[in-house]
Amino acid sequence: MGMNVGGGGEADVIMDVNTTPLIDVMLVLLVLFIMTIPIQLHAVNLDMPVPNPNQAPPPQDPVIVVLLIDFDGTLYWNESVVAKSDLFARMTEAAKGGNVAEQPEMHIKPHKMVDYGHVAHVMATAQKVGLKKLGMVGNEQYMN
Figure (spheres, rainbow, N blue to C red):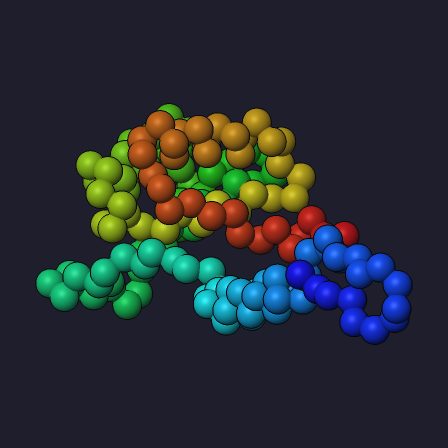
């Protein structure tokens, strides 16, 4: 509350609330809140798997099977001709019961002019027997 000092007239009481202490308290609280906010870090937290010390190291040189598909659909398994009827048996032998660590890497290299149906047949057969390590190689021939 305030009081009017001076002047010879009627003494009127000022009925306005003094907001200065309220603003001071608000500013002090604002500073305290800003100081207590944790620092924001721009990082992505990842839950990485814990390494198993009993796990054997992976083999240095993986076994690679190159499967070429010629322009007429002829299949070459590591440079030897394979009939389409024998492809399922060879891929089943390579899958070895579904253990991914023991499977060879299968590099499928189709010719530029081969019909896609032949490539789809090879990939479907690989999926059917459970081969997981598949890769298409030689795709740079399609750049031009």
